[in-house]
Image 1 (tube, rainbow, N blue to C red):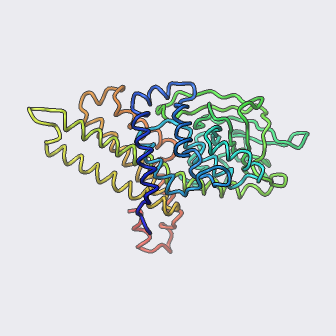
Image 2: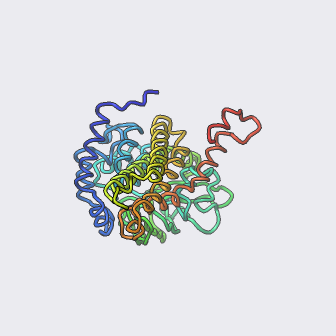
Image 3: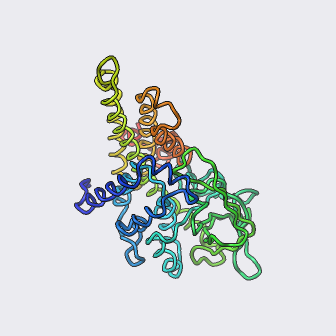
Length: 404
């Protein structure tokens, strides 16, 4: 394994950090999330023109940059550092890879170029609170119960008289669901006897589609309630009567989940690193008893522990970029590091840090919201251990030591 970044990757990191440093400070973040879209559209277009960020992992034949997971992880560490509110996660990390993996040639040619250019944004619609399960992060997504399971609830798909598909149901926590121009909806079809989950494409102007932005803890991760009231939809891919699509869909979702875990881990590492840097800057300047707060040994010890946590999480995230199979463990490590670092940042900022309006709470909210959406940490670790067979009689002592 060669963990060194190339000159091109270092230049991308430098350029992205420079742009975000100028356009995405705490005040700009707070202003952007309060717009109708929930993000700065002009900044999103700039990132697309200068860096090709929306299409960084899209193949070059479809207008993307054609980079690998390591480049996406490196970029998202910088967006996490700035807590960038953008459709990057829903569009580039979740939707585009699913279209590339499952879509027909016509669907890929139609959808991937505008997604890569940033002119079209997308969101993955998963019923209920099952996003982590759908991506196989906290449990097996093979049963399909998270999409409805053949019973009431979730999103149901049925054939209409013309041979097309109609969707009916609701999803309450859809990332970027209020503003995305394209929805990838995971829907259950086949009834209880032939239960399977398929993915469908729904356009923003589809009749019967109702979307409403929700009030959420972390405004940099806007969410929406999506209602589908007999909405016309297009099946993603070309499956005969949908019968052969279930296993492919679940496998593709799990593959996307592994990459998404590495990306989310890098985002959390970037956020934790910035929260720590801002805290170090504050304790250097803040004086108590005639000396900087940071000069007290107890404060130094706490900051040193945080530094070790962040560096360990960064190593895990970089390793997951090379081996996405380790994405779940890396995400658990990074979310834990962000939660601890954000909490300590509030503590070390003293009385001002406890005010809800202080910038330290932006990182605390990100930590809490991400663990609710993609965790919790103990379930991420438990599923990784189960997948690796660490608790089976055949597991070796070396294998059991991996998660300790």
